Length: 340
Image 1 (cartoon, rainbow, N blue to C red):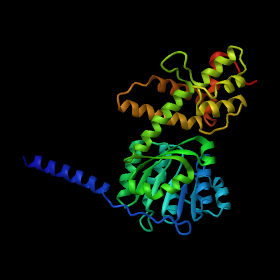
Image 2 (tube, rainbow, N blue to C red):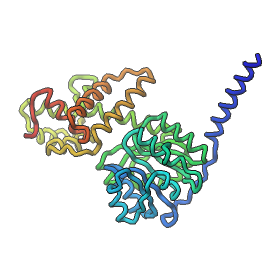
Image 3 (cartoon, helix red, strand yellow):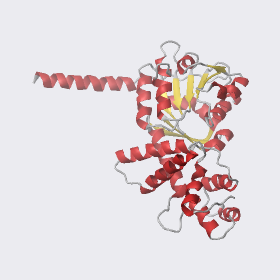
């Protein structure tokens, strides 16, 4: 009986501790281009232009970090300062954004020995991770941040390199709503469709569903055999003797219209495989989607097919190319070459 009450007490204390972690009161930061200190981790294909939009929007008091320092040069020329580590960056900033490659990178930036959440003094008030990552990791970072009165948002993005450059991204933000409302003007500098998705981790769930839709749009046969994905339609039009460029122009304003049709096909027909989204990153995204679908006891055959094809594409050496490189797998399967 004594053990029962001891165990029960431990459970109550554990639950109480958990609730205390989530219950800290977020105090909004005045957003002033002259005084607000912005931190940015990750200056790759997406992160660099996104940070540029913040600086061009007046927030020039910016500290940046990237493992490859040379990739920060365009921002340094605009007046940003370079930090040697995420921790060093955290000590100098009020609001921190991150946009990196993989969940392992997110863990290292926030939870590593030189990570943001190792900061003790001069703490940032809010961190926003815009990487496509794992919902459980987003929740864990939220909890660890809350222990230090640092609010955390997961705010993954969609729209590729074009959306990043043009400031037209879709942004799925989740976490403390007061924190979201506080920094929403900054998100609006980077995206044209910013959505508050709910509690911590929900932004990642939104992004996962988004990636499933993209994968389906790229290749999967929907409901009836007459509705094929973008890449398959190109293969079919070529094999049927049609001019692929004329075909795409003919259908672009009809029911088949989509982001993939208007953007990826244009690149495919120019034999341009440079990345908007790296194949390896998309493999990561679809792998996370499969894992989360399994947790929900969902069978998603289209997602499984897409994942297997992109894994094959990466294995053929196209991991650092854009997702439109999927055409290479379909060309190989059908022994044809659309662009010669």
